[in-house]
Length: 126
Image 1 (spheres, rainbow, N blue to C red):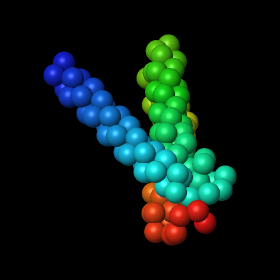
Image 2 (image 1 turned 135 degrees about the horizontal axis):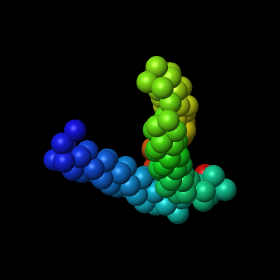
Image 3 (image 1 turned 135 degrees about the vertical axis):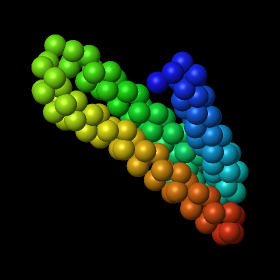
Image 4 (image 1 turned 180 degrees about the vertical axis):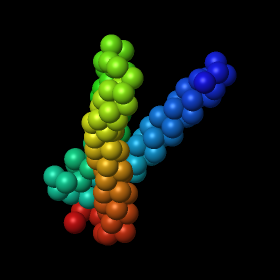
């Protein structure tokens, strides 16, 4: 992988993070507007959901990156035959927090979108 390709990957990752933050912020603002119109505990807590989901998603990927770095560091002393099996196992293990974070983040966005839509369509104060 060339030096320019690394910059492209970093730029793509930054764009993806910024996009997720913009979506989370938009959902948070919408949920806060709906929360002011509606009553009840859920509506007061709803604005927290998108940013909490985004944070847990970022945390999942950060843990996965840490596990991947550890996986590649750990195979340096192994025989070539053992490296493949060890990397396959450790990479698979590292993907668990990444997919879990992605699922939690996505679910929080869907729940926030649905609740804000419902809250926007129903009468205020109910």
